[in-house]
Image (cartoon, helix red, strand yellow):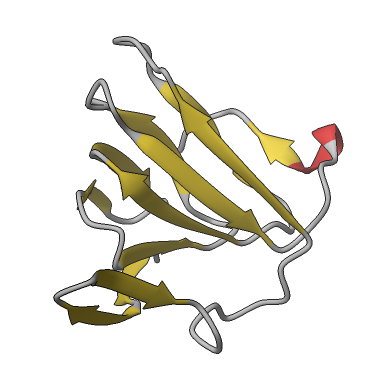
Length: 121
């Protein structure tokens, strides 16, 4: 099931520093970021093998998740929040703020055969 983890953040008068060192439960093979999203819904899939970590590093968005037994919405509104999406997690991303930048870390390189687009019934 998808779950949130807190990233280590150091705050002081000069600003904030968020570190990703040992928190991600997989070896990162790919990263991408989504931004400039209108009212569109992104995602709409799960994976055969890819595990992902999603961090809204600026602005906010909602990730709606369905793992086949439970549906849950996650608000990503702080760069210290990281949502881990397992292979069984069919998800969509929506309600992007105009300034949102969603960073996604993936455990595999891109492979179109890894995507499952049918949502659980």
